[in-house]
Length: 370
Image 1: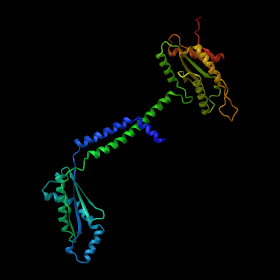
Image 2: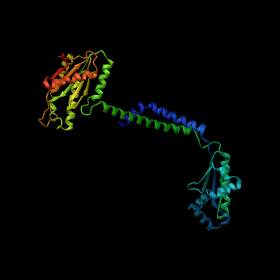
Image 3: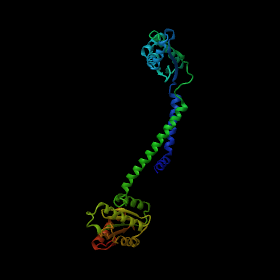
Image 4: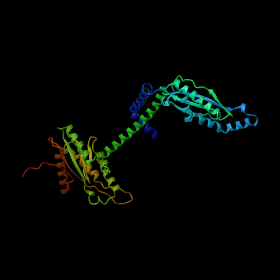
């Protein structure tokens, strides 16, 4: 399931993946062809062996045993990479060391062999090959004056390479494509997660946590949108108060409060039409928007809702404690282009009359002066 979840994220953000891959490949190609300086590597190999001219019998065996312990071969590797050998080579070439500042040398000992590998990397293939051979020759001459038991000679002299080891446009572009795809997938997942976070925040602002009905600010927004979209149409706003739980609302556990409020929301949504809107108006009040409905028609529908909500119910089957909501309803309709605030005031007045008079449903009526 997790794989399918991430696949859907990538499917929604396919354009991010594509853009990231294209940007990475294009950047790699531009860098390879127009920015990067080609670098070449020249390699010289050297072999270390006993000097048979200066050995007899047992000395040959001892020298071979020393070579097996790698001490001599490691010493020669350090000689090849020594700064003293480098400086001596530059002096023999009658060159300023600064002229070779863009060139790097490295020495490696091949495993299970008495072979040394000297690598010189730089922007000019001819200079790289010349440096590798010059450094190698100067190291050979230096070692011959110190150790007469062993010989160090060229196995392969360095030759000028014909192609750079970097950049390699095709290989670099392939790697950039892979990196771009990975970055694109990460961006797609991050974007989807961030979008989900924003939707969650928006949802929390829209929906009341206790009742799952719309919050009062968002309900008022929906009413304004309805009045603006249908300026001449008739709408009804109703306010419903749960009069039966006022006495013990504060003493009930929060889980019970949530269960009661969500039961009311579900009942209202079930009894109303699909385009009707249910909101949480106050602590024990709900608000209803009934588009294209006058007050007389709304009363009939709200009577049925009140009867359903008025039936006693129990939140816990293990107890005999039952709840009767005793809902009271006040409503007002828009007949002459009244504003939201006017409708709300009228509905609140109707609800107040219902609460005081004991009338279950009260419809706002314009009272005569005097």
